[in-house]
Image 1 (cartoon, rainbow, N blue to C red):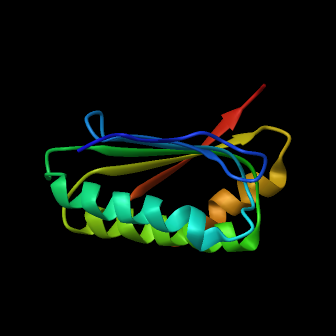
Image 2 (cartoon, rainbow, N blue to C red):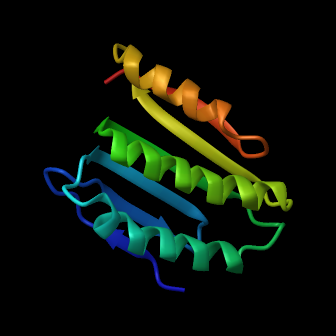
Length: 129
C-alpha cells in the first residue's frame, strides 16, 4: 500500500500516513471550505489501510492541530471511530493529541475526544514550544 502524503494549505492540515510504519500524522490547521471533499479520500485510505493491519501491528495516530472548526471535529470523531473499531477487534491503537501548554482549549478538546473511545489508547501530549 502506498503512503498518503498531502501538503498543508492555509486551511487544511498536512497528512503523512505511512502504512509500513503504521504511523499516521495530521498536522496544522483544519478548516476546509468543504470538509468532505478534503477528508473523504483520507477516510477511504484509512479504511483500506485498517483492513491490511494485523493484530500484531500497533497503529499510531499523531494529531498536531493548532486550530480546527466544528466540521473538522466531526471528521476527527469519524477517524477515532475507525481506529477504535480496530482496537476493539484486538489491534493496539495509540492516539496522541499534541497541544501547546498554554492552549487550554486544545487540551480540553483532547479530553473530550478521549471520552469517546472505548478501546483505543488516547494520550494528551503537552508541547512547550
